[in-house]
Amino acid sequence: MSNINKVILCGHLTGDVKTKDVKNTKVSVFTIAVNRKSRDKVETLYIDVQAWDKQSDIASQFLKKGALAGIEGRIKLDTWQDKTTGQNRTKHSIHCESIILFNSKDAEESGQMVTPQPLPQATQQRPQPRPAQQPSKPVQNNQGTVQFDDDLPF
Image 1 (tube, one colour):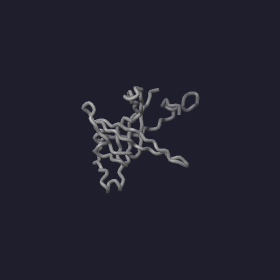
Image 2 (image 1 turned 135 degrees about the vertical axis):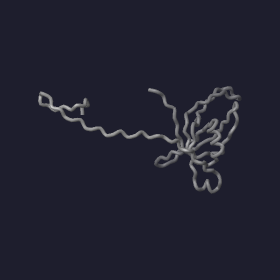
Image 3 (image 1 turned 120 degrees about the vertical axis):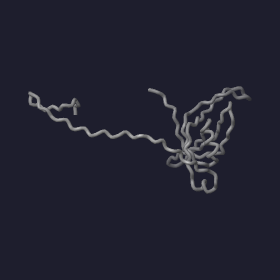
Image 4 (image 1 turned 180 degrees about the horizontal axis):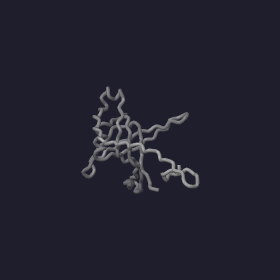
């Protein structure tokens, strides 16, 4: 069985997107708050997201603090050595592969979010339906039992 590393989240940004250049490529970093409601309480997870290249451009252009967004990506483990203590540190984050923009009326009216133009859909040719097959005709053998000319057991 193969391993799967796929994450889909929907939540609100806790702050504005921070973008920087790393080795001639853009990276945007932001945190998304995801709520989980149970019977008597709400649990909030704060998850760090890294968007690279084109996704970085989309994040910096369209995402603002408080915006509702969907993030699709994979879990990534970052490791580094703390400069003050010298200890090895680790942190999980999401490597963003696609961003889904959700707009609310309040965000559109206040100008916090811009509605992107929809991308043209690729034209796909649908497969032509196959003509219906004629049912097989029963054939009676010499033992008096009825057999069909196809080899399906039902």
